[in-house]
Length: 297
Image (cartoon, rainbow, N blue to C red; front, side):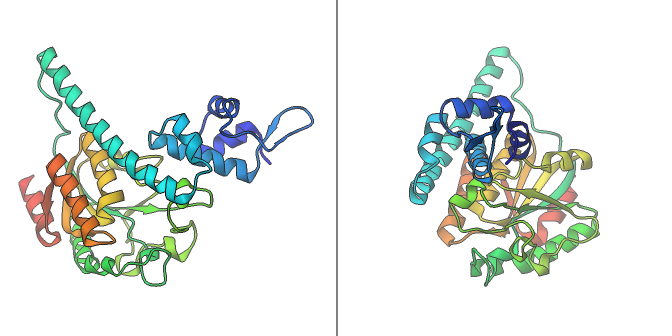
């Protein structure tokens, strides 16, 4: 059992937020001590983390109340709907900014200047391999190209940054998928052929978007990076969500077209179409991407 203050620290919530969730019935402490103080069990902490994750996904508190104890299939359907809701919200926000800039008589918001380039490798971990929690043979399509790309990047002093799933029991994402990339397990380790080398960076995430609740932004700022070349697993989920977030943060976004893939060709192509049609991201093959981008600088 932990106190409300400890619960806040362990779930990245505020004490005020936890009290509000208790007041509206989202998470009521299992036990109160003899002095009347709230005591939170492991199950309570897991529920609070779940609430926080749903809030990160921009679900309303009313929607969260319906999802917390819903069947996995219902949660997954809600997530799919929310994905498109958030995408539309991003488009609306972008349009609103353009209209405001027009009325202010200013230039449209410009991205950060094209500065140092970094290669981003997302979710390239053992659980995707045969024997893992989420095995898919399609991962083999991109490993050789990524080996060559990562090696060339290191030789040309381009930072290689791994953004890796790292889950704990109770994470909201584990309600949607089999337990995978559990902290400290073989499945969470980077695929052997792509093992990080000295000088590389590893950032851990527990949600689809690699910028949420992670140190990715701090790493990029410390390296003065303004251009991101995305590679990795699930074009239509973690790649697209992180790349689109980077776009709205002002980064120049590039996709290694043969360095990303997903669990089916349909899902892979959906992800590419989303990023290319809606955001016009540049896309280059792994073999020539660094030459094109570095020569352009």
